[in-house]
Length: 216
Image (tube, rainbow, N blue to C red; front, side, top):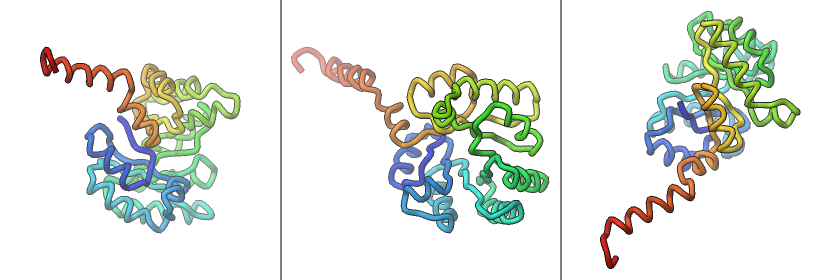
């Protein structure tokens, strides 16, 4: 499934209108880029769902596991379409285990190595979001790490899905898809690039000209 990694309302609504995207992913940084804060999460959820998002990923914030878990419960109270995001840190993982024990779906985020698959399973997470491009920045092969993460979770059979994040290029998106990664979240520019590839647009324009018949 494809998700939109943005809280830019106009851009997200336009992309959701295509019917091609399953929902929206956000985090505090994404909210800040849209001029929003953590307190705006309920409003983002409301307009995203109204625009057709089937799932909205909202990140809990807090100084420690107790605060993270409490905020996660408040976010989940917004609706059954909310998946709570938590960082793959000791406090985040502790909060994740508490939430999943209460039936709250959790996505572990800020994941930088395939070994963190074991943490996702231990926490009972529904999903895990490896940062593909940022792993490349650290000298790792982000696509290869994400593939290994997916293979480990598939082998465990506990149902945790990989949601690839920090995808920077169309080539990365294609490689991840070829590796069987089930879910990708893409920035608005990358969504636009995926939808409006120049050669395809030119071919479609030529079809329209040819359909008009000779002399047109």
